[in-house]
Length: 178
Image 1: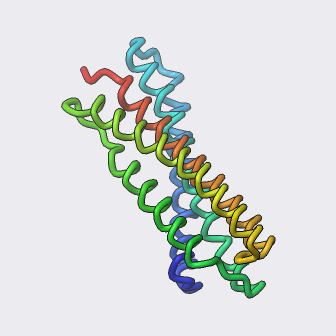
Image 2 (image 1 turned 180 degrees about the horizontal axis):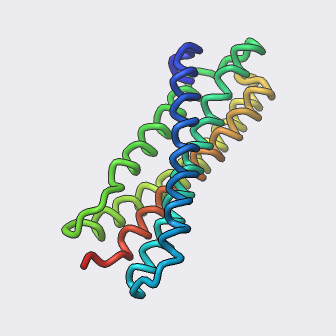
Image 3 (image 1 turned 90 degrees about the vertical axis):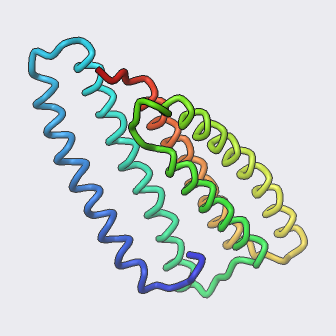
């Protein structure tokens, strides 16, 4: 979206296809694992992994939505203002930073969750600020209404990505490593 390079969409579609495939296959495996007579801790882990896999797939869906706007904007000849593009860049970087704290290691799970939680709140706060900025741009006619609608949908996608990242972080932090 930021580079306006439609050729990059092919890679995004391929990654989304892979994520969907992996989601399906991992879920099949987890269903089988869940049918085994597992100790309580392992059953909780399997249940948590169901949620993590689902959240990863949802992040992929929202990323796909954001990339889909690229084609729509190009097809309709709609452009975002420079201010909106800067805000999108900030949302992207904040989301990627939050994602960077998703890892499974006993030493810093709680610290990582704290950072993810803080960044998720930052995404929520930025969403509110950027929505107000967009309304101001629309009022001053520096942005057309169709671009404003797409921008608003995109902010919702970023906000939900943050929510899913937080869900994953909470799940990882709650698992005890035996």
